Amino acid sequence: MTEIFDLDKVISLLSYDAASPMLFNSGLFLFLFVGFAMGYALLSRRSTLRILYVVLFSLYFYYKSSGIYLLLLLFVSLSDYLIGGRIASAVSRRAKRWWVAASVVLNLGLLGYFKYTNFFIDIANNIFGEGFLQFQNIFLPIGISFFVFQSMSYTIDLYRGTIKPLDRYVDYLFYLSFFPQIVAGPIVRASTFLPQIRRPLDITREMFGWGVGLIIIGLIKKAIISDYISLNFVDRVFADPSLYSGVESLAAIYGYALQIYCDFSGYSDMAIGLALLLGFRFPKNFDAPYKSATITEFWRRWHISLSSWLRDYLYISLGGNRRGRVRQYVNLLLTMVLGGLWHGAAVRFVLWGTLHGVALALHKMWLTVVPRAKVLGSDMHPLWRVVGVLFTFHVVCLGWLLFRASDMANFWAILSNITHNFDLSVLPQFVGGYRAVVLLVVVGYAMHYLPSRWCEALHRRVATSSFVVQALLLTATIWLVMQVKSTDIQPFIYFQF
Image 1: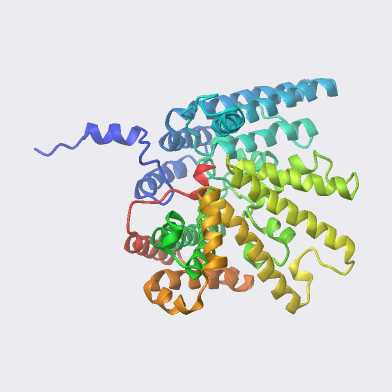
Image 2: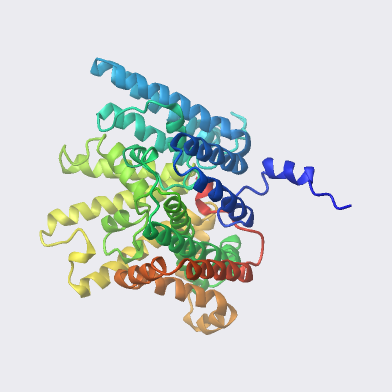
């Protein structure tokens, strides 16, 4: 007799597996999401039950991604919900300041402990000698950088008086744990998300179509383009640069620039698409960043939710541009250095942030020296725009080399290959040996540089198609992903941040 109920499979489904965290681009998530969506539809008119239902699924999703560190998410949500109530009820400005300071210290303290303890131990050992402090085996909870910043936006906005406090803890837990963006963003502001929680559910035909289109685009970017060029070329070059020429090393940097864009924007597309299917609107997180003709424009197009968060809660808090030009340049540098540290506890991330901070400061200086200079490439003469795009792209690529290198020795090895071992005669051999990789890189960049109106028109065509057509397109995309996939499902790059 065939066993209908397999207890081992149920236990496996309910248990956390550190070697196989749940991902959007996994078959398990797609299977569970279909079941979840059915229950969600049945509760469409039951607001409180629907919220509880989504919270439970979101907590399960995060548990399958991070295990016991689910308790950390619950702690942050409860502490900031209670602190938020104190901020709102405090009479004096001084009391409000103390409570918001408590939230900032608590959140940054948790982030600092899990993310930077070993970094500071390494610095201390370099200064005082090896063995001065013992390294700690501290696991970095997935998504901690995102939900900590998101939670801080709630308490800071309460302090600033731009939002009102929530009356129900379950609503705050919904906001902080919402599964489409809990592990890798986008960082959704409280002011944007909270008003949507108890709003009557209204998933329009347009929302559903755009959501499906974004999920298809996200899967193509992540599971086809990013994963393939990473596993079959980029990772190999960075693993041992001595085996490759300068041409291949430069190609690996260009490949990584496309890989990280497709990986992270692909995740954001899927997160925004899933949210639309559930009736929630998230702001755009990427806007063709490699079309930027200035470094300022780049940071208005790349990881928009993070760059705007750093601007509104860090740069402006430091004084922004209100205290003179020199102070503005210093504030830009500090903001980007701290933004680099947010990405990771290593010298190369500090240097990556420093590079972008200096570039932003120099661009601000250029705008004051040359009155006709433009902040954005869209305002430039077409010829200067092309020059600006090429220059900005290569400044960004230098940053990506710092970002991707395993350490500074790896960075210098790649850079040395390009400067001392560059021979264009190997180009035909490289293209012949990596035909599929080169094809995907060309296709990826071609898609990226298509005129925005063409991309929007194509997306609109998918969004307005019939449900049957959309289902067929999604099925075909999943089939194509399975054909291209050459190994286990790859985690998203930003999971490590």
